[in-house]
Length: 206
Image (cartoon, rainbow, N blue to C red; front, top):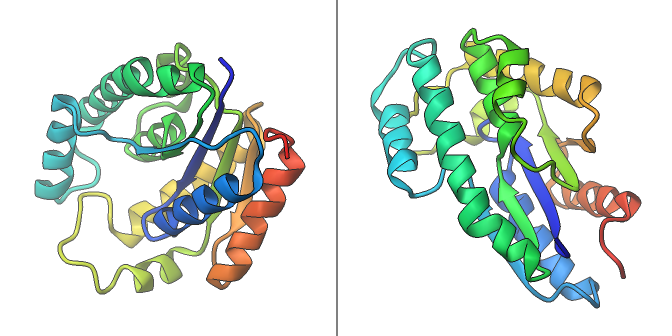
């Protein structure tokens, strides 16, 4: 594959959408080689992804349906990689993905599934060239989401604390290239951290 696979991770309210937008602008403006950037996300709009969104929107207990969520996320993600991500990488695109297998490790481990089981269940999925983990205190994330309509299954402070802790554990223990970004800073400061991480990684030729 000739492209570059970059993943943006973080708890709800961490600013992933903003990071994705700014990264796309930066890559297309700076890189001489990569003029095509695919923005995508997990879960997708597949049948499995739609089922997941239904669960997230209608269930209120963050601890229920753990294995159903795991299985749906992995099935949806596997199809997404095969049908969209790998073809784009083969064409030499930069793929920016909002959440990937690390979110299943963080969220479903928070639901009680052993971490090693979650890692093993996703071994068939490709490892990204770079993972940018937007980290911030749950209290700040909750404040940022206070004006959103509706509340999804995993959007409560206690569960989000578990997920944040799990994300940071992954960054410390996995061999993957995971860079922790302080997402509690201003938008411009966060963007500068993203640029620094991208440049230091060396995944893009300039």
